[in-house]
Image (cartoon, rainbow, N blue to C red):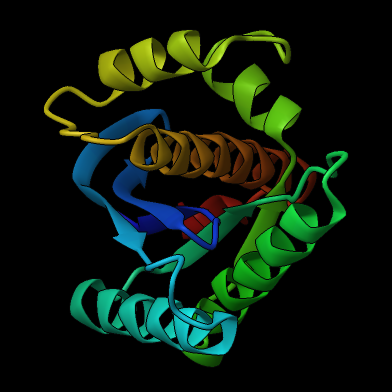
Length: 173
């Protein structure tokens, strides 16, 4: 079963979630949050985030990664810092040679709940239902698992479409 890493980037808290996915079957592997101290300078916080992600990737060896896209809010400084963290979340798996996909929040909610306007509580409830045994001590970890679930659904659809468009020769089945 391919191992998928979902990331919900943030400078203070970056959620991560690992799932195993085979077609429509999903299995929770691990989840957690990488925290940085707001009193620490931003470059050191980004290094901490990178080092923690690199260690996580080295320990679990995911096959693919998915990162939630950044939303823009009214606070420009906060959006910029979120962008820094997102850059690290994209870079760490890429440096390890892992393919990285990106999904907007509405796409994630649609894949997990069935509506792009779902509330965070609905997403968390569906993640618990789809991945029994997931600890999710913080909402950031639940969001990261939702990103991984979204990626699993999208990759299964892409694989099914590829099989439809380019079926294996009759003797190869």
